[in-house]
Image (spheres, rainbow, N blue to C red):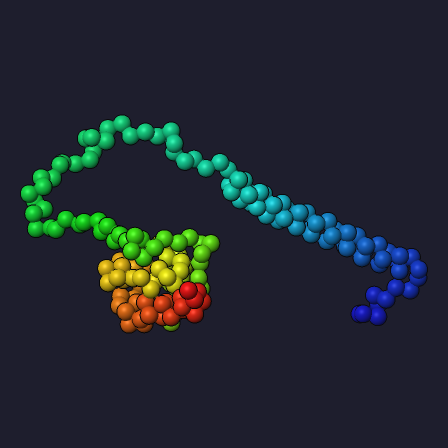
Length: 177
């Protein structure tokens, strides 16, 4: 049966070639239209997403509250809150620059040479106005407490690491009078 399908003449070869060519072209065009529709759908979907991201955002600035008084509820009498302590806002302690002296960044010493002061604490000290060894060596007990609260760091560290003595020693070494 297969031996009967073998082409013998050149016209039969040509007809077999034409059948294959027509089959190829039909498959090619059907596949092309199929993928064209598929990718067109994806492109439209992506364009819709892009437009969604580029759309102006409604901030609602035009909306104004009209009847807020009616919706806010009833006023609560203060006697209901007798058991609750009032929250006081802590005031930051005052540092007496009259006793320790005033300095600015141009007179700045390397405070990191004092044991217990690193870059972070040095930055905090500079923020509150302490730049020199002389200022630290003049600390009183009140100043130590104030600085401890102002730098918001380890309580008692100034006394424990003896910053005052270290600063006085560094002052003598760096600025002999």
